[in-house]
Amino acid sequence: MKQNWLEKAEGIRLSDYTYNLPDERVAKYPLAHRDQSKLLVYRQGKISHHQFDELPVFLPKHTLLVFNDTRVIPARAHFTKDTGASIELLLLHPEWPTRIINEAMLVQKSSVWACMIGNKKRWKAKDTLHTELVLNGQSVALTARYEDVEKNLVRFDWESGHDFLEVVKALGEIPLPPYLHRDAQAEDTLTYQTVYARQDGAVAAPTAGLHFTDRVFDALAHKAIDRTYLTLHVGAGTFQPIKVDTVTEHHMHSEQIVFTRKTIEDLQAHAGQIVPVGTTSMRSLESLYWYGVKLLRKETTEFFIEKLYPYPLIEQGSPQLSDSLGAILAFMEERNMEEIVGETEIFIFPGYKFQICKGLVTNFHQPGSTLLLLIAALIGDSWRSIYDQAMEGNYRFLSYGDSSLLWAQEV
Image 1 (cartoon, rainbow, N blue to C red):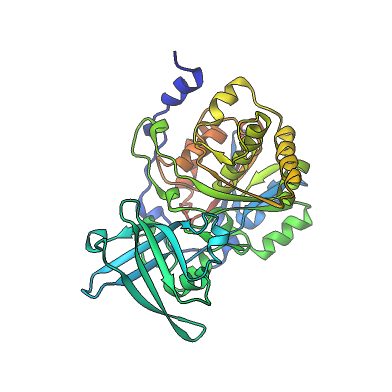
Image 2: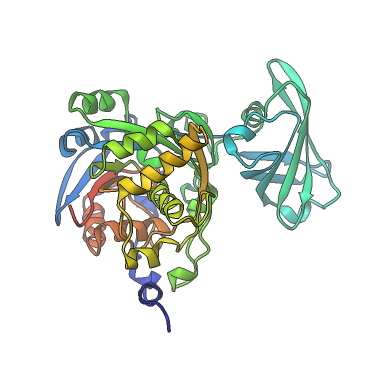
């Protein structure tokens, strides 16, 4: 006999979470001033329309805003074979000599990455791709060859004295979302990056953060709005469409997350007042809670959250947030750890009960996407009236589009 939570989950149909998004409503370019975008505010069934630089007005004093400080790397690289065929590589995640992205950026001489490969049929297993880079005024030879054809693993080799991040910056371009239908331009290097980005490794920006400026941060500080940072290196899987109507059958991508001890202590001190900036921050926070649950249940010390792990536990009744975070801090204290690295494929859809997050700052998402399902989990069926009003109000959609502040149903 099936568990009740699974019966409910299998009853969720993708067709109930779609809407018509004309291409002309997708923002192809950012505004000249980041904080001049529109801001839709939703709370307790009421919708109001504002400008993003008014955000501090709608946040209670001592709210903790949680930001994802990942930095987008120029992860799209082009090689040309001797035959003239063009091979495009999109870096996804490192495999060797380390899977930890922050460390992989510092590797020298050789590295293996999982890639998306454009024009793969023209790149034979035995072929080695060559290119010359200019690093610090010197010419550096770089080669790329298959490490594993079936798994799309590519080995990069280059001359010593340069780390992989230097190589990527010299080789690649910013990988804009596919729905923009345009090539990256020089200004995207700055505009498709948050002003607080610090940790190199993402292939997509945490776009809810693109609206923040120093001026907005000053206004937040003036109102005693607190902030803290985590790192989730956004992967290309964030753009992966759901291709099945029964959403639980969707293959959820995994992404790497990093929390410092200070961030977890900040969360502990602000329980009940936590608002993530962006869906990546929200998925990270909720994953952190469930990692603490795993520690409390003595299941494992590995930080990995499977896509449906929370749901049976939500139905049974889950531990207090303070207990979950306390278990993680105790674990870190025992091992003298200042940060903890994990991975998550958590899939948040209607029926999920949020354990940490009370609201969300976010952009407007694609129809029938995992991100829209997350929004519906947070605010229920109101998502449709919100998106209808945004459409009627001429809001700009997706990565370079406008913003919203959404409060959870219970608030």
